[in-house]
Amino acid sequence: MLVLGINTATLACSVALATPGQLLVEYTQQISKTHSEKLLPLVAAALHDAGLAPEALDGVAVAAGPGSFTGVRIGVTTARALGQALNIKLAAVSTLEALCQQAPYFPGLVSPILDARRQQVYNAVFRAAGLETVKLVGERAVSLADLLAELQLYSESVLFLGDAVQVHREEIVKELGSRACFLPPTASHSGAASVAWLGLSALAAGRGVSYRDLLPLYVRGSAAETGYRAGREGGVSAGADYCANETGAY
Image 1 (cartoon, rainbow, N blue to C red):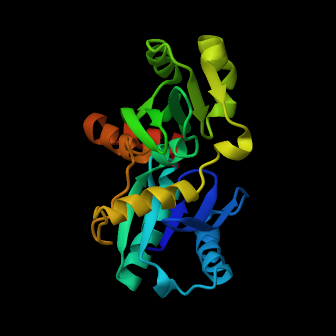
Image 2 (image 1 turned 90 degrees about the horizontal axis):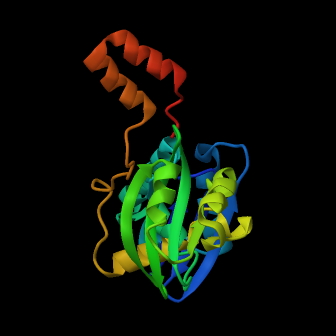
Image 3 (image 1 turned 90 degrees about the vertical axis):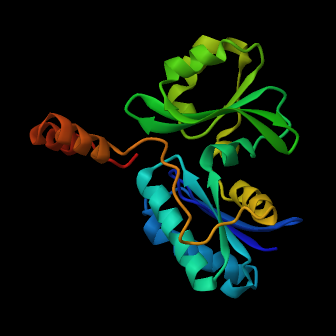
């Protein structure tokens, strides 16, 4: 089985080609061009360099969120288009679970954090068990203070990774001390290889879906959606002001 992994849920735009026994290609860019400009050329380059045609794909796995609303939409839309064009199954993968897969065998808790803005991080809490993971807390948007208070209830070391680590590292260390562990920046970005691996497992287990049924995992509504609801409930001007002051990108 050959699976294309796509991860555009964060600043990184990443694609990977994997079989059950081998990672064939992984290309990742973290530059200023938008994901909509970068993604399809990266997919084409990965297939070309692997000597494969799109028709060789047996499935597509995509980081379906949480993460940047725009990035998630780009990844999911591209996966759906490929699924429809090639008549292949798709797998939606949690961005946070894919990050956790980048740190197998860590002897403690794994707590990926992504910047959710609005004084929050996207987070889930896992315990690594070899190449498998146990999800202790599901995907949510939470304040860093609440997350750190929750982690104080555990006695284990906690590995943090993801794009919010550099922003909040000092506060994390202040609260958890030597229990807080970190990967180097080169290993902490959101890549597509782990998305492809998780997709392979899901597709092999028959959990693939058609392009019609692939849905994003937003966790919370965008700022624009929240503003719209506020406007509906409290007056048009409230919603309009909210939307004018928020980008809605995350």
